[in-house]
Amino acid sequence: MLRAVLFDLDNTLVDRDRAFLECLSCQGVSGVISEELMRLDCRGYGDRARLFAAWSQHCGTAMNQQLFGEMLARRILPDSELLHALGALSRTVKLGIISNGGGSTQRGKWRAAGLESIIPAHHVWVSEELGFAKPDPRIFLQAAAFLGEAPGDCLYLGDHQENDVRGALAAGMRARLVTEVLTANALQTILEKERAQ
Image (cartoon, rainbow, N blue to C red; front, side, top):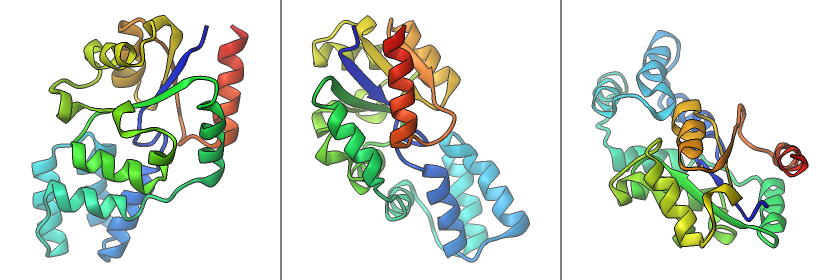
């Protein structure tokens, strides 16, 4: 039985890549420099020190994790249809977020997306705050234990095969790979397939 649905944040519930591209555009960066910064960012998985050094060099402004997180959060937009679908889902199952990254950065994006009105702060698990990160099964198991649900009754949705899918499966959860930022329709389709099994 499906009793909880847990989500990755970046490029699953929020369009982090679009936000990053908008950050580059606002800096007037394009062409080869834009491509270099995108490569260094590596969809959020790149080496932060190298990205920030290149950012400072090409954009002429100092960059650090706090500024970067705030800059991304300002460009995260709520999806009202997805929020409505999540609100409806929250009436039948427990919801949560498991995300790798810095606490203030990830929570800033969670708030900017309007998710705090549906998924409370104590249902958001961030790797920096816990001391271990996906794909470590402990982060998934801690979420399931807090929710009071068996891992096998939890479904995890995320965009990264290793961190999200393999990590959740190693913890005994069900998991599905998300190939695009979730919409209300995409979420409904995934849930219908999951419940049909």
